[in-house]
Length: 224
Ligand code: ADP
Ligand code: MG
Image 1 (cartoon, rainbow, N blue to C red):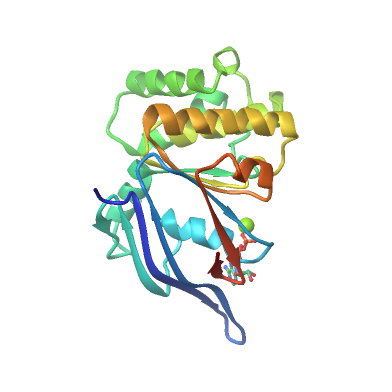
Image 2 (cartoon, helix red, strand yellow; image 1 turned 180 degrees about the horizontal axis):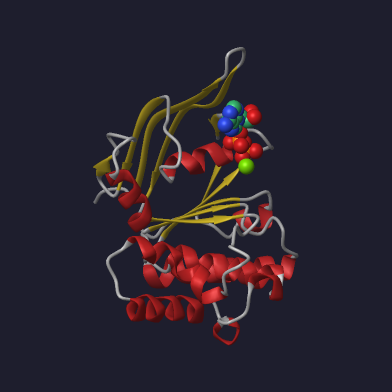
């Protein structure tokens, strides 16, 4: 069986005219379908860079990325946007919801890039909203929701297109521990019921211990 995520000797160097920052060096990682992995390490060690590379938001300077058995060959190709849209859901610490849009409209955003009727979009969005337990808030605006609820909307948006990979960059970083536990319960549910592969960056050892495996980074390198 193919790994869902396969990283082979990934290096990422950021270059400006004067400084070179090695953000990642010789990273090798395999994540299986339905596996829940957490990434830990001090600030600046390359966690977000790693997630962005898995999520095809950033191109490695060396090494290869393979998602669901397919090597990512060209980062300029329009096809890459399609892969990102279909295969990957992203959740961020600061939610990144659009304040002028209501909950359903926020959740529908990834579907706007697919050939789909408005009615179909709405149906899928409502199903994703139900999945995160927010049906009664479907017509609220983000500012009318608590932080935990906003993060649940962001999860609904990330999963509405049924991606096989969910990437979460400190998803509980702005939440109290009870809300954090709610978010973790939703992620565990997705992993178990939908077989989604999840990679989550966290600073919280308590949450990392709930995942199947912890990848530790220090100064852009994997440590054991
Ligand atoms: P973490 O998420 O673990 O805090 P990051 O992946 O954001 O770390 O950053 C890793 C390193 O790469 C840091 O030293 C950071 O300053 C550097 N870096 C990240 N993004 C950029 C960028 N766009 N340009 C230059 N340096 C960057
Ligand atoms: Mg980060």
